Each structure stands twice: as structure tokens, then as C-alpha cells.
Image (cartoon, rainbow, N blue to C red; front, side):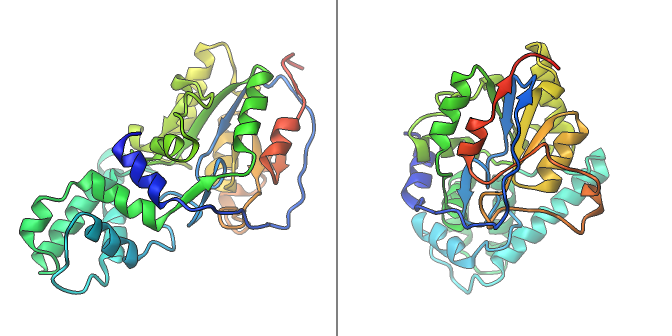
Amino acid sequence: MPPFADILRRHACELAPQPTGMEPRLRPLRGVRAVLFDLYGTLLVSGIGEVGTVAEGASQAAVEAALEAMGVAPTDSLEGVVAQMQSRVRAVHAEITRRHGIDYPEVQMPEIWSDVLAESARRGVLDPADVDRIDPEQFAVEYEARANPCWPMPGLQRCLAALREQGLLLGIVSNAQFYTPLLFPALLGRSAEACGFEPRLQFYSYRHGHAKPGPALFALAARALAERGVGAEQTLYVGNDMLNDVAAASRLGFRTALFAGDARSLRLREDDPRVAGITPTLVITDLAQLAAVYYDFDIP
């Protein structure tokens, strides 16, 4: 197992989804040939409900433990380091938007943490010599493993196997960091590809510099599907967020399934005008329901 995947595995803990109180809305789907998924909160139970860097619940304790794991002891209180990280993310987002016109940019967390740790050294919170020997990638993984523990959603592997047996192409469109793909070997014991996800149908925000709910990742997915003779209207996208997933995918012509299986991650966005008038094709509360949907490959 890759070393960073091993860190994620060692700090994973079994998490059960929290009921949302929503009822599923299912119906047969004609013409569907591919199913794409969000990852955090959909394929995986996420301790804080999403990947991310500015999600509520990110903790100072995780920073302290990550430093300890790397043999670094602070010289002063680490209070405010998480807030500083979140502020740095927002500042980099704003700079990317200003320079490149990307409304929903993605950051690289090793770079963010490198800046934050260097600033902590300048403020006397960390020894500069210690900061110089910290690997920012390892620190990002050590922090994420503790701040956002994940676990496979119940029935995940059975669902994927059932969809593959029906001949459906499987893919991923997700906000993510470099360690996100490592969650597959860490939690499932095999790569995303071995789980059935097509290598050319995996779109992670950190690889492209664009995040959801922007259209870029979905446009890339639509283009890759078209190269295989599959249209957006022949594709079902599954996610837990009405804005990032359902509205964003709908605007690119995908059919959509709102995953309402965990109260931690369900984002209905009822007061957000960006989801006004958007209705998902399906609502599912358990991945087994997705596997039970009748998919007819003939275009209506």
C-alpha cells in the first residue's frame, strides 16, 4: 500500500450514515449508459461532510497531531492555525479568480500548508529548522486523515458491481486533493480502477484547477464520454449537493440523482437561488437503490 494511503487507512474509523428523513424517488431510466459519482458524502461517509479545506469541523487538534506524527513540537500555542489555513485558501481562490477568471478554482493543499507553516515559523510558533524538514504533502495527508476521517458508504462495492454487471460505464467527478484517489486503496483495498471506475472518466478538481459547482469538470467529463459515443443525456450523475452536484451537472445536460443518504453531507441549498427550479431525476437514500434502478440502453 502506498505510504500516504497507509496513513489514511490507519486513521480511518467506521462511520455510519446519519438518517436524513427524506424519501427516495425512483423510476426506470431509459437511455442511460454511464453513471458518474461525486466522492465525499456520496461514495464515502465523510466525517465533516466534504473534502475541503474550509469545511466546518477542521480542528486544531488535527494540526497538533499531524505535527507530532512528523516529530515536530510547537514552541507556542497553535491556536488560530486552522483559521489561518482557511484564510489562505480564500486568498488563493481570490487571486486565481482575479488572474485567470476562474469562478470556482481549486488550490493545492501542500502549497497552502507550506505557506501556513512558514508563517507559523515567522510568528515563533514553530522552529524554522523544524518547518524546513516538514514534507508538505505528508503533512497535508496527516492532517486530512485526522480532520476528515472517511469510510465507505454502506453497500458501495455491491452497488458498483451491480452497475458494472449491467454494462454501465462508471466515473468520478469530485472536488478533491491529491490524496483523494488514495482513499480507494486505503478503505477498499484496491484502486478506483480496480473498483470499476474508468481511468479516463475520473475528474478530480486538484488535477484541473477547477472545482464544482463550476462547469469545467463536467465539461471535461462530457467530452470524454462523447469520445466513447456516450452523450450527457445518456449519463446519470450522482451527488449529495443540490448546487455542486445536481444543479451543476444538470446545466451540462446530465441526468442527476440526489444522494440523500447521510445528514452530515446532504446539502439541499433551499435558500440558494442558484438551485431554483432544479429537480433531480432521482432521489436515493441508499446506494442499493441506485443499483436497483432499471437502465434501458435504448434512447427514447
